[in-house]
Length: 225
Image 1: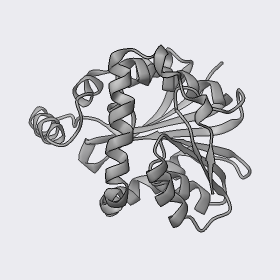
Image 2: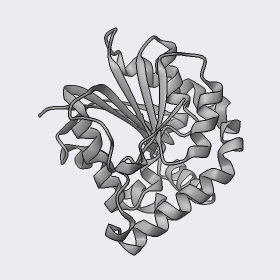
Image 3: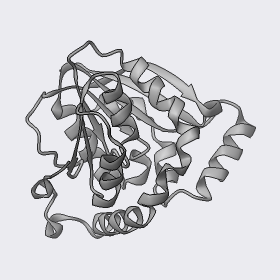
Image 4: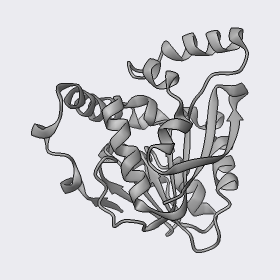
């Protein structure tokens, strides 16, 4: 079942023109791509399990999957017995997630990552997969602030997103390949120091894992205060 929490979405009149373009494009693109999105499944399935392993959350932990899309990461946590909520802006993507779900542990809610309809500190772990690079920096910062707000002190935020390999040649090749199919914000995102950015919101990165030959990074942070 999909819960509807769109009242939490930032009023359109309060958004900058760049942000309005982002929200309009996100809804349009993902409505079109939702039926095809899982075609990338084999490549990313192993990453979903690595995220669960890295979290190593105690039994009974509450998990939030931000920008859940078709629910792959949320369902990976739910499969291991965790009560999991996945949120996304796209109704079409969440309908796919619900169709795939066979677990009573997974719940899906239409909600904006920058204004989540949850109390402070209610989750033990939050994950955000391949979403930050899709966002303008202003939206990204609000989403991270909200993620920090809804996890408890001592809880985890796990960020899974693009990175660059250590080799200059490999970095050049990966960057230019990803730019062929990713949106306009990828180039800005890849220049960011994600560790430093997370620290601004009270999240200290304590572990990092590389995936897909360094083209993806999985960062585990702890909310310190």
